[in-house]
Structure formats: C-alpha cells, structure tokens
Amino acid sequence: MGFPGSFWASWLLLVMVVSVAKGQPLVPAMFIFGDSAVDAGNNNHLDTIVKANFPPYGRDFISHKPTGRFCNGKLASDFTAENIGFTSYPPAYLSKEAKGNNLLIGANFASAASGYYHTTAKLSNAISLSKQLEYFKEYQERVAKIVGKSNASSIISGAVYLVSGGSSDFLQNYYINPLLYEAYSPDQFSDLLIHSYSIFIQELYGLGARKIGVTSLPPLGCVPAAITIFGTDSNDCVAKLNKDAVSFNNKLNATSQSLLNKLSGLNLLVFDIYQPLYNLVTKPTENGFFESRKACCGTGLLETSILCNAESVGTCANATEYVFWDGFHPTEAANKILADNLLEDGISLIF
Image (cartoon, rainbow, N blue to C red):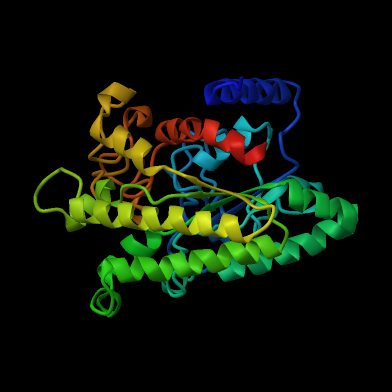
C-alpha cells in the first residue's frame, strides 16, 4: 500500500524545516536569471533609466536602503532563498559584493526590462538572457579558480536555478510597439518567446544546470499600469491581456514537459504565479490587503522606476496593505505570499 502524495509532501517539508533549522541550505547555491521581478541590483551598474536604486525603493528592506530591487523590500526570490536555508542572498553579479567566497552561494544575473525576445533588453539597454548566460560562464571560471574545478562542478550541478521572463516582452515591448503588434498576433508573438525560452533552457542545461524553476507569466491585465494604459475606464483587470498570459503559460507548460522528456537528468518545474497573484488582486481583503487596484508608490496608477521616486506625491505610509508596490511590481508582503505558495512545488524541484 502506497502513501498519498500529501504524506510525501508533508514529510519532505519536515526534512526541509529540519535542514534549514540546522543552518544547512538544501542546495549548495542558487542562480537567478531574468527580469525586474528578480533583479537584485544589476541594473544599478548599467547605463539605463530602468533602475530602482533610489528611495522610496528599498525602504522596508533589511537595510532600509534601496538596493536596486523593484520593491519596497524583499523579492519573492529572496524569500525563496530564505526558505531553502540561505542566510544571505546570491549577489547581483555586476555588484562589488560578487567576489571571493560570496560567489560560492551562487549569483544573480537578472536585469530589469530583459526578456525572452531578443530586442526587449536592447530597448532599455538591459542585460539580455544570452548575455546573462555569458556572465554565468564567466562565473564558473571564477569559482573554479577559488575552489577548484571539481568543487565548482558540484556547486553548479547541485544548485537550484530560477528563471523569470516574459512580462517585459509583452508589457514593455509588444503591446506598445507597432512594429511587433502589427506583424504578429499575440499568439504568434508568444510562440517566438517560447522558442527563445526553449533555447535558453537547453543552453543553461548545457552549462550544467539540472534543477531549474521557471515562473509563469503573472496576470498581466491586473498590473496597475496595465489597467491604466490598456483598460477602458474600468478598475477591472484587462481580460485580453490576461488571456494572452494564460495562452503563454499553457505553451510554457507544454514546452517544459517536452524539454523534460528530451534532456536526461533535468528537473524542470514551472512555478504558477498567475493564479496566486490573481487571487490577491481579486480577493485582497481575504488575503490581508486593503488595496489591489492602485500601487503604493505615488498615485499608484502608473509610476515605476524613475517615476517612482522620493518626490512622488501620494506614496502610501504602509505598503503591507497593498498588493503592488509600483505600477508593475508586487510589494514585499505580496512577494512573501507568492513565495510561500510555491514552497511545496519547490520541494519537488530540490529533492
């Protein structure tokens, strides 16, 4: 007689809690690729306007100072690092902290405004995913010099990898770029993104990654800035944009399954952030929030990056009451809920 899936999930969670309580991370390192949802400060070091290294960004972070994270505090990836036992976060690869033993717990290569489509990053001078992979190759060489090739190989193969992409491709490129939306239907454009995603995962696999978690698209039509720009005088989510996100996510799941069948030893998991975030937006009070249409920063309708600054009029006093921090990104409080919702799925990625 076999045990039910819930038993194994509870048992693995217990193992996880015990390991973390003993101060032992469940994996040797954590590597992060993607966009502003997971950028921990790489854009601080780029010639781009897409930055978050100034107040009020970071006001609720541990240091109460801006770090380059597009949030008032921690990102979902920060909470994920904590959940699997890390006491510090993988450093942004372009930062001065990314050196010596700090690199042994991994690195964050993500860049705000990057995406799967090849021109998305170029629009804002962000780090493309292909360039992020080049930095990862460079990282491997640096770590091999510190701990030797064998130990470096163990770090690479045992690490967990997080990938976030697609939102910038749609919201900051496709929907506002006539060269794209007149040439491709949303369905055709998502096919291009999925093709790029497949190539990226295969290249990451070729560099030694075996435990990869990729986030789905969020409900694009529920983001405050998207409602402001693409809505029709309504505070409701933009159905068309959400439909595009669901279609992309279906393709993401199907392609990921194909990659699992194709690549031996790969553990690839799609983290669904669409439904959890949709629930927060449509049922805020049930989840402990007061406001889900407007963001905390400024008017809450559009501001992000340089438009969300210390002079922004109307910025809320208590971000824990808000689902969104700026026009595009969740608050720390929402990020914690999203990360905790993914915890059980994350266990299967690690074990």
